[in-house]
Amino acid sequence: MEETIQKLAASRDLDDGELSFVIGTDRFDVELKETADKKRREIYGDSVFIRGLIEFTNYCKNDCFYCGIRHGNKNAERFRLSSDEILECCEEGYPLGFRTFVLQGGEDPFFDDRILCGIVSSIRERFPDCAVTLSVGERSRDSYLELYRAGATRYLLRHETADPVHYGKLHPHVMSSENRKKCLFDLKEIGYQVGSGFMVGSPYQTVRNIISDLRFLQKLDPDMIGIGPYVTHSETPFAGFPSGSAELTLRLLSILRLMFPHALIPATTSLGTVSPTGREDGLRCGANVVMPNLSPVKVRNKYLLYDGKICTGEESAQCVACLDARVRSAGYRISVDRGDVRRDGVTE
Ligand code: SAH
Image (tube, rainbow, N blue to C red; front, side):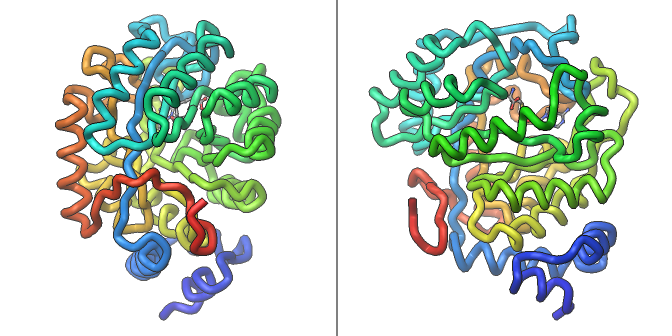
């Protein structure tokens, strides 16, 4: 076995020079993938957890340069789901086996604390055995606390890039890497299971940036880590930049599994968008979560963060059946328990 990969598996870490070497070459890819898969099987067996993704608003006050639903994209057709429509998505998802609902949206001021807390608590009331995950961007600590009290226990907020200079190249000046990181530590302190992560191959990203991302994740020690390739959207300032690669994303998934053996790591839609077998390959490289879309079909082709997004035309049941087949073809099986993080063998 290659010494560097062995060291990564044993110590869950490498120094910057070694990491930079492993990230920058394909020569370890087979070994990385096998070692990462062995590690995921030790902790999670062949289970793949499913999260029902409900994209409930594409209104956004932010102007992230890479994102298709940025405020400045005047061609985006905007939508907002009502509380009833959101609950209907859960009604549809529950019999399909979902025990986690992820509410994701742009930063839409319409969903203030009162409205969002109302939605969270009605989901928890109607489905007491389900977890509610929020992914609605940066809010105040008080707001995160209210939402936690209303029954949300998990939060996804990718840090996007840990390097403030790189962050400044991807976002307008009113946004800061500092605030995003503060939000993550607030969420953690409140008691949420927290997910963070970054895009792979975003414009101007260097290997050094990726190492900063890994170091930031070590500091945060999140329960979930989401990474996916940056994918170009033609109506953003980054229209001229190429998408990130599946190859580098897969390599990083394996590195993440070895650095964070217990993390819940999704094989993302963006990975499936840049490569037809992206999600299956992601699972084989260490990912252990998939997030089928439960949004109503009529809005799916409006939540377009990037061009060519897959799974925009199907009913939820079709989406689940398709992913189930993909998971089985990759050599795993979908687990319908809540899929809480396992830290040192204990289910939390
Ligand atoms: N408003 C929420 C949800 C954002 S969408 C928030 O701020 O967290 C979820 C994720 O999609 C983002 O965190 C970003 O990493 C990713 N994303 C956005 N645009 C993308 C693009 N063009 N290609 C790939 N991923 C993108």
